[in-house]
Amino acid sequence: MNRSLRIVVADDEPDMRDYYQAILPVLGHTVAAACADGDELIRRCREEQPDLVIADIKMPGTDGIEAASRVEHDRPVPIILVSAFHDAETIGRAEADHVLAYLVKPIKQADLETAIAIALRRFEQFQDLRREAADLRQALEDRKLIERAKGVLMKRSGLDEAAAFRRLQKLASEKNLKLIELTRMILTAEEALG
Image (cartoon, rainbow, N blue to C red; front, side, top):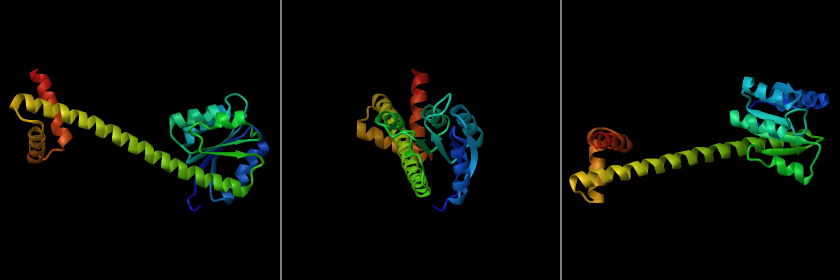
């Protein structure tokens, strides 16, 4: 791994916090904050804006899974959950989409390094998918508006659908506007004129 990360860790065991503070710099990372419970984790993530979060599941107050969910809700960030337990119920709770890796204590350096790399890669993939989904939603919304604008031209000018679309394209080109900008102008004018 060649990228140095700012990491917030959370574990109610002081020995584990010490372990992270010792091992993460060896892996080339900075511990931005070491928290003893989930509430502190949420607060420190808001303050520190880390590149990655590593959190124990079982902590007093807000547990690691709930804290991870709230951290992810505030600002998407790769999250690795850690537990001394590997029963089906614990793993099932940890399978939320905001958790990108799961480690069972005791944690070996190589396992931690691998989990960090995997979590970062998965996070990048999820972010790409989120952007793609947002782009597709916008394209669909734009397409609906263009269809409505074509309908306006068809009704007002007696054009067929293909001719109305060509006219939209020509007008957009002549006015040096994006097609969707012209579409919005037409729909606004149509709404104003009734």
